[in-house]
Image (cartoon, rainbow, N blue to C red; front, side, top):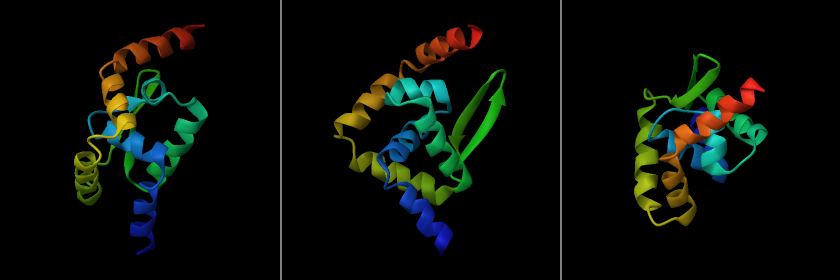
Length: 117
């Protein structure tokens, strides 16, 4: 029961919910999440660590980046997020996140420049 409660508590945090909503669409690295959400790397990483500990998010290393995605085996969470996305379709913050998701590669390119310095 505690695991279930903690997973749903994760949805009560705005930053974690925003992360999950964009990850519902596709996998992303921290740099891309930073650009999309307009948050700092430490804040994004902290929330990703929490979501990973709960088993909601997975990570996969590709070259110098770690990409995060939803745990697609967690059917209850995936369906919960889909229902929430319909409920929040008019939320301005989530709309902006979805618009910036279309520029995800731009944010990855910016991160690549920073890692080469």
